[in-house]
Length: 119
Image 1 (cartoon, one colour):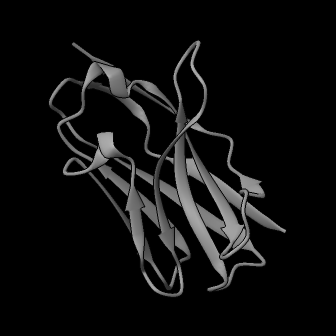
Image 2 (cartoon, helix red, strand yellow):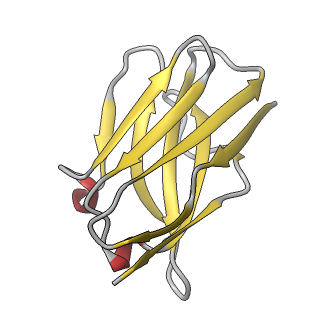
Image 3 (cartoon, helix red, strand yellow):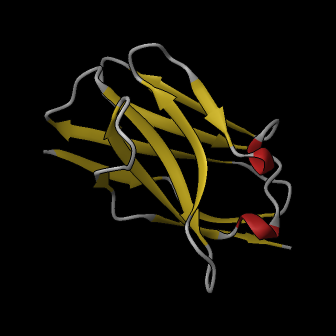
């Protein structure tokens, strides 16, 4: 089992920045790929970014390229999402998730953290 706890959400004005954190505990090791997803009111959950722990390979949704950066702290098993130039349409609950690398589907999810961007 892997436990994930997000933090760092909040209210920010358009053009501002936030950094989300996801602390992993439990059976953490380099076999996992970790990702960020978000869900806005009335919309389906969507992929934001992912990071393969063993290789450091990252992937981004198109809307996040150039604005969002995913990174990690190996020693603390913590993942970050730096979000710059935020837009009102980035308003959503952001979730951290983990899956075994090579396996489709994320098995572990955090409780989510609210990000609200005002215009």
